[in-house]
Amino acid sequence: MNEKINQLKEIIEKSDNIVFFGGAGVSTESGIPDFRSKDGLYNQVYKYPPEQILSHTFFLNKTEEFYDFYRDKLNSLKYEPNITHKKLAELEKAGKLKAVITQNIDGLHQKAGSKNVYELHGSVLRNYCMKCHKFYDAKYVFESTGIPKCECGGIIKPDVVLYEEGLNDEIINNSVRSIQEADFMIVAGTSLTVQPASGLINFFKGRNLVLINRDATPYDRIANLVINESLGDVFKEIIV
Image (cartoon, rainbow, N blue to C red):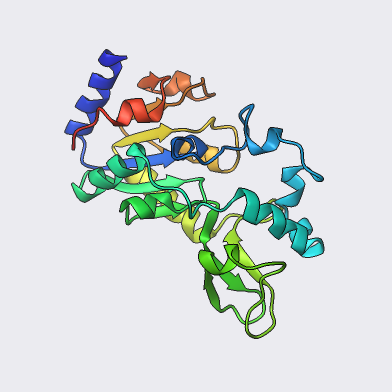
């Protein structure tokens, strides 16, 4: 463990164009449950499967039930950034980290101070009226009851990518460019099984690829360094 962390620290020290790609495991140490672990949202029992609730069709047809689940399970306002979020913000401030690419929708990277964050699946912090496109913040939505409505009468929708919806082209293009330009890529807290997000790793052509995850991933074989430890234990050792 110590030897691998020392390797990671040495790579960070020698790099000035780092890109970070993270999944649900980045936020679990803040208390936010992930989706696919044995205690994750997808392994809990609900009236409908979470994958169905978090679909575009379900949102349109059963909007109030969607929001019952959404308020109960996806409210990240009560959580704070953990050591990983904070260290990444410090690396960006130091000029080493050029971009954070995240599959998370909780906004904790920005709350920790990161500026250049590409949110592949959107964010609970942004919400829009489907009729007039007026913006509403997360507090308005999470503190509302029933179906949140705009002052124009339109239904408000979170700016999160639901099942059956495509990823934002601009976010994808910016993510790909950042990965292609990086000399060092850290992939952390993700099983790398969800497409198309996990496929972004294939655009990396730099010198060093490091994977940090509790469990093995399909990409371990191509990494320069694999660390199977909790992110908090790893990032608390990083001195910026």
